[in-house]
Length: 338
Image 1 (spheres, rainbow, N blue to C red):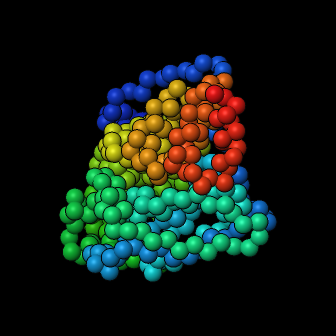
Image 2: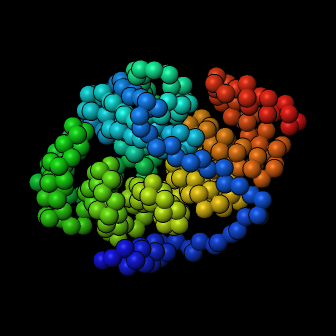
């Protein structure tokens, strides 16, 4: 199926799950505030490595997939998976003020701002308390094995595939997941895991097809919806991202990530008036983890010449990030725009 037909089919499928999205234009003076992605390369990048330790991880039925994502001005620029032991290495990290996010089975459990050193690499160990792991277990966020019952033979292959993913053996994981799907093509979770592998390999067409199949089988399956939305966002297919992420936030109204990426997608198409409520919802759901979104909103208000509102967002940000390396700059802006 060619690209055009795939998009038409996807739109029909998702629109049958949700209400139509009403278009809304911004005033001509509104600015998006979305920064350009900085392509890593050369001496302007570095490596971050360390170990993620999950409290009481030895008591878990299975070891979860730990992902490390680097954000620059709220936009993902590079990512990597940790090994089964928790050790991780992230390459091509910009030497700027960045945010490092840790996800466990797709749920955010840690977020911190880092000031990159001017030379050398950065070593950082991260401890994730049990309270964060429990909090991340929201419906539709973590892998929903309890919702899909598969034969024991498929369960064995699926678990082996999960271990292969953590070990970085993606080719082996693909073969195992293909075996699961050959036996049971209705396993939407296996389709989603397959999509995740192709996404990481930057095989966009294969990832899109796998996510699309998962959504076709279970139209409100949050993991497939949000990951497909992130895929479209990373590919700069923002209108597609908006369509999918709107449905993701309906499938899981408690997903801060869903509203965050929906807001970023609206900003990318210069629909700031739609981005603001989405980002505010993300902040409401995860006030500390999504504190950086106050900076996104401040940039939006500043671009629209709403200086007082921008100053208010900087105040809210500093209340949550009092040790920000740019604290003096934000305080000056606040003072200049009383």
